[in-house]
Image: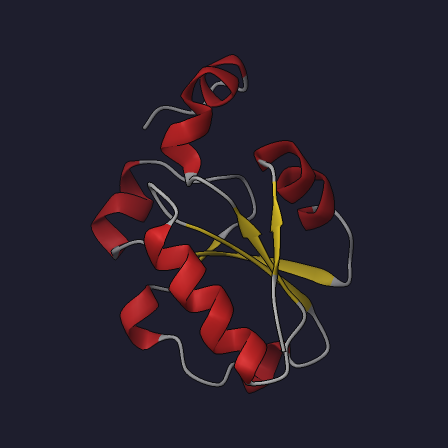
Length: 103
């Protein structure tokens, strides 16, 4: 199974839907420094089979896109419908600043 790359805005829009959940796959200290609204801290190193979210479509992101791509691939292999915010959130710094999020 494969995952779908999406933009930051697509990720934010999808995360507002009840059938989606967003994971910040960065280390917890990075999550605490700033994260997308509604995102859950789910570091790449601890992502396994997320049975609690089996009925959800999963959105993942990290700083630069590498870890989230690996997480997306792993979750897709487990049968989840996964969306990866391509390029990571640093790629979208300008948009995030306009949204009031500090990184």
